Image (cartoon, rainbow, N blue to C red):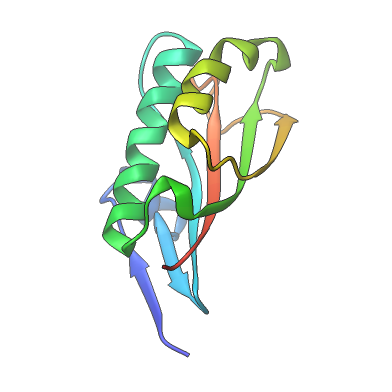
Length: 119
């Protein structure tokens, strides 16, 4: 089986020993991704942009995503992100899970992880 690793060049990748995405076995596994910004919606859009770039580099689009996990320290902040998520996935929503948990730094309000099927 061929395995391809995709790096975004982010600082945490080298520090923690991971890469943004791994392409293997017909799937693209994108690591939990946080974004920049002062509020959860801005961070959500930023994280989706980073995830989208990894998917594109792997040869996928948003409609290839079959699974998404959202992680937030405050579950009440999830609802403001719903319109952004609905716009991103459109008519091809993946299976989804939202988990309330602590993130690596308190400044982060949302982390997003996806799995996609290679076309």
